[in-house]
Length: 356
Ligand SMILES: NC(=O)c1ccc[n+]([C@@H]2O[C@H](COP(=O)([O-])OP(=O)(O)OC[C@H]3O[C@@H](n4cnc5c(N)ncnc54)[C@H](O)[C@@H]3O)[C@@H](O)[C@H]2O)c1
Ligand SMILES: CC(C)[C@H](C(=O)O)[C@@H](O)C(=O)O
Ligand SMILES: [Mg+2]
Image (tube, rainbow, N blue to C red; front, side, top):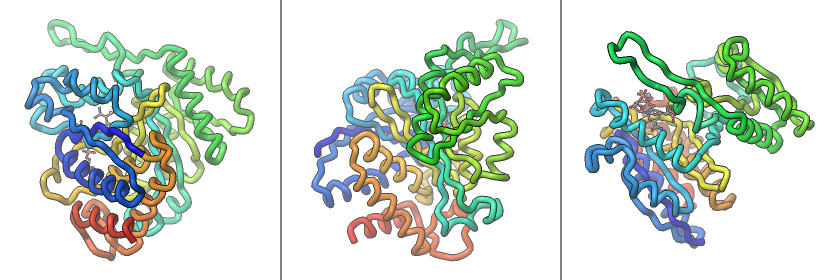
């Protein structure tokens, strides 16, 4: 199989974990006789530095004709004081919007060998396996107006959604539950927000179409609490953009580190962008110690969802698990025993397992 993949390393640890993804993809290509053609493009701070824009048109054009897109991370203190339209994060939001990547799937499944790496009690996280289905192209992130008034004495952000935007992500939530454990938790703030009231009505309407799925509504504040007191009560969580952003970082605690959480961002037309849930980790950038697992699990998701290469995806996931079983871990994981390794060493260990 021949596939063209756009690579957007971005900033901070982005290029370090992207190198890991490329090494793994080359190993998979060799083992299964595929050809992956890589097309490196700029996004985020790297693009601002070179082209004075966080999202060059060339990057959008390349993504539009690719079979899939892999993204590292964007952002960092260097650009934190830039005007809003020259922030690296604008590049990420822009590519999500340009490709209409409305459905962000963030699976949260811990490895049993890493139960002790979480600050939560092992008996609480044991058996937790959930999927956050986050709306990615609407809500507070994109609503207009979003601005300050002239004398800076007031500010407004807008939480806007159309019914259609809500319907398609809620459908994705139901469909995801159908192929998992058939339980859908819809998270909203319907006791306060008009947008959440419409959201809840749509979930109620839609549930007639998915009679095999059990549905519950949970307010976002309570959901935040339940996620770390009773995580195994969740199967699929569907929620709007901002709530999903916050809950997914919280959920990463179940796995021991934010560096373990992959994601897939999908459009209705089948286009997919794959990226770890974490950011550019400026505090450890350049040290060679970033955890590559979130990036590599995202790469496996790309093989599965965009290329239907189920076996290849499973080979990567199993190799990661085997390395964790052998005791390899990166510095972000607070495990008690094993061998602490660098990004490159972890990647090499995973490659060795794939080649076995
Ligand atoms: N998708 C993205 O590109 C994305 C996501 C989140 C944040 N950001 C951006 O990243 C920058 C830093 O944000 P932040 O510090 O709030 O969040 P962050 O996710 O970058 O880091 C939070 C903490 O987790 C650690 N961490 C994250 N990923 C790790 C990995 N793979 N291995 C080891 N440790 C890891 C970091 O070292 C840090 O201590 C900001 O500019 C932010 O806007 C980008
Ligand atoms: C960097 C930022 C714009 C982004 C978001 O909020 O969506 C990030 O936190 C994420 O979770 O992918
Ligand atoms: Mg986030």
